[in-house]
Image (cartoon, rainbow, N blue to C red; front, side, top):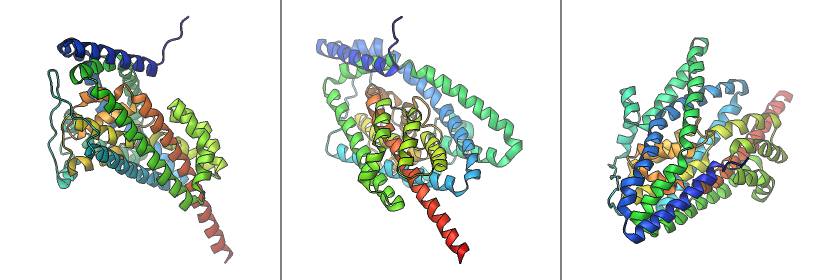
Length: 414
């Protein structure tokens, strides 16, 4: 019995085959063939992504909020953990945007020619106050039908909080959300399995219409993302570990390296949990805190994904000739940060959430397929960064809780 190729290998093969077919069509002057007969299948795949993005974000965020009901048992540990995750995610967005804007200003990101078959349009610019007002929905169904992702996130937060506050009376809604979330995640996994078809058809079209220049651009955007990953790990995590837990950066990365290597190669935060738990405890984290922080972090902490989203969004917007003003940049940060609840642990979440961010600023989701073929390379780095943040958080929270206990002891002894 032959062993079935894994999905990442299938996507890689589809990418290579798509590039070959695209180059052949480009050299022979048959770019219209890819636009007329291949790209429609890629468009079908992208339409399915658009179809699933709203229910995935809505249900997974509500379910994620409801799962944090356990924070009542752990008291301030839960709120400190979430504060750490949200702050580092916001910083990650800023780092990702800064790297992407720098690369864009240096002219390293291309603007693709809108040749036959191109579908993207420029987004309209918005100021900060318009963005702030636009976050809050006046009609829930309109928010869903127009895929206004910031409004969907706000709706999810409000419903999640309301269900949690309803207690026993909200139990039926809680069970419905949990069940519906499981179903929609299964549906999403079905759609993600069609990725090789989407990658092959869209890459054939892109290369056939744009030529070999786009291939060098993919290497550049990958480099930009990894620069962001490294900056965030070295400065944000090592500084917080040093200032809050008293661990030197060298010691932190040395003891965290087994989990980081495992996460990089497996590209799975959940699979890395046993290794990251052992590494965090070797750095002095308490077992009860790692048991809470690490599983929670595998679900809600996604600094690597935030950097990826920001870099990919600026890159794809530039490809489409879209100028991102202050309003769009603020929207990217808000969307990527708020969306850190619930969706990180879902297979394929990186693609779904990138579609969400692109939709929120009016950039065509079809452009995702330009970089989707190398998503596995992005995913390895962002997963490594995510679990590094989980370990740093568990160490910092453990130190803070010890100090709190010591202070209480001193006060009682007096």
